[in-house]
Length: 123
Image (cartoon, one colour):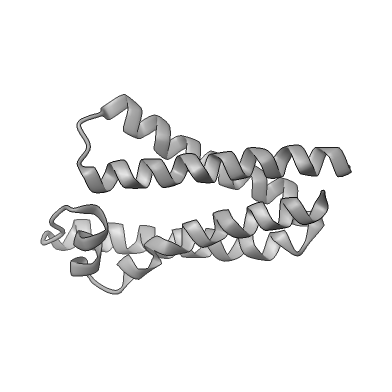
């Protein structure tokens, strides 16, 4: 079961690494989200967001191999994913690329729940 938690955290970590490419440019952000990021302040904020997702992704992957960090990683992952899903649901009107992010986050949430159950069964 502990290997299952590690695999689930690794999968979610990789999912969180995917937006990291947005840190490279506003054009890359536009390709990821289907929005324009021509306004410099918005581009800065979104590129920084991409870096933060990358940091969380690295942490999740690392925690998959460090059982002492797994509870914190599971909570951080669940908070990250559910906050985005709640925001998307509460605002609505999102484009097809954001809908794709929602679908991927639902997969991530499933992985985190499976990982969390596996972790509690081994503790």
